[in-house]
Structures are given as structure tokens and as C-alpha cells.
Image 1 (cartoon, rainbow, N blue to C red):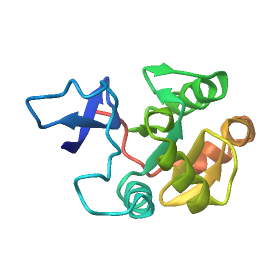
Image 2: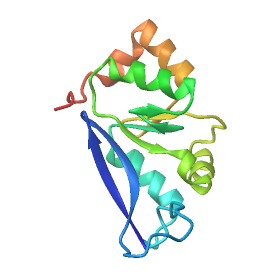
Image 3: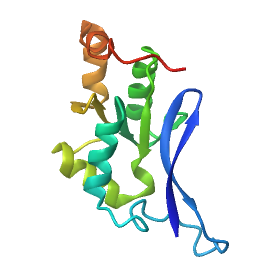
Image 4: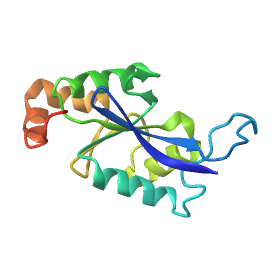
Length: 144
């Protein structure tokens, strides 16, 4: 049995699964995040995007990105000192599929700002370079 939790690390929030059971040796594999909650992964993605001003679905976590594109996206977003919520798509292949279906976008990372799908690292970098990202993030309170 697992429970969805939110962790905070240097002002960044990422979501993960924590075991509730005393016997966690069953293959040492992560449980799907929706397993015990009864909600669909599409609902989880929709709620993530709605509840978090900046949400990134990435390979790895912001503190330890698992690919160059995810690393680039985190570096660009960190420049603005906004709270960054993330999910590691490598932990759950079904989550990866649900995010792709939600955004209709095939690659990762996928960044959502104020409920709107913005794109990946190349788009975020371009928006940063031309000033659009600063404008889009201006009313989000800085990390505490």
C-alpha cells in the first residue's frame, strides 16, 4: 500500500510515493501513485497542473535530473526563484503515458505554468531568452 506525499527540498516540491506497509521488500519497486487512492492517473495529472503554479514532468527530480533536457528546464526555471513542483516520469511508465495523453505532447520534460501547458526545455529556453517567461512567471510568489 502506498501514499502520495509531497517533499520539499530547497524550496522545490516534488511528489513521490511512500510505503505505508511494514513489509516493503516485495521487489523493492515503486508502486503506482494512484494504486491505493482509487483515482485515475489522468485525474492526478489534472490535479497537479491545477494545484501547482509551475509543474514539471521530468526524468528525475529537480535536485537530480536524469537527462540533459530536464536539467536545462530546471536550470532555466530556477533562475526565476519560483516554487517548482515535479514528478519523476521514470518512476511510473503509466504516469508518462497519462501526461502525454493530457498534453498531447510526445516528449519530456513537460512544463505547465498556471495550469497551461507551455512545452519542453527548448520552448522554456526560448521564452527565457526573449522575455516571455519572465512575464509569464511575474505574478507567482518566490520560493520561501
